[in-house]
Length: 262
Image (tube, rainbow, N blue to C red):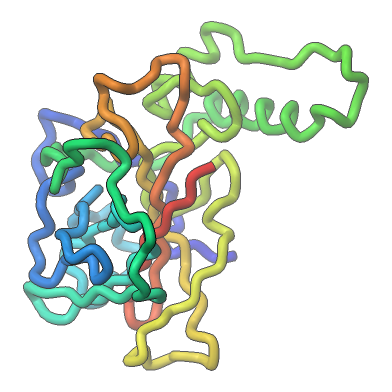
């Protein structure tokens, strides 16, 4: 599988950063409504496509790329740019849901806008710890049941927490807010999506295969309380594997957001 953006770019909340990229906020383009729920789509992240760190690819008509989702109907959301200040939203399934409600009461119409920085690469020591976790997990069950499971030391856990932005209790936590590249944890980006845009110039019989471009996590501490508030979050539970994943069509630049929780 090829990557839309070759570098793994980590997206980090940074209150002192200039707002070239930001989490949350209200969508700035007209037409950002959920076709099923008829409510504004929730903006999780908005990036400036002219950032030099993203220069190895064109984003076509997108000057800023809005990563949107609806946590009320939890459907795959396909978006196309329909003009300089407008977008068109497509759903593959327009049927009415039997139970359509947000994850918790008083769910916000938008998350607070917060500046974000882009950082490239994975430190070698973090990569080594993560790979050992994956290897140990893959080998578990294949040997004697009395074998003690390996866990990172407190120093190693501190390195993982600093890099990923949260404690890493399992391989499903080896993920973070990300643009491009591959992640270290479960290969969710290998799931297949096909472009549904009837105006796509390279539209095949089943639609062009779309390419992984981003992942954004449930992160109440970062201002992204997708399924729980910071106040209601159970500190003994780790919901960092709850995420919205995005793929893009490299021909017409249609973008899809999908709930890919572990």
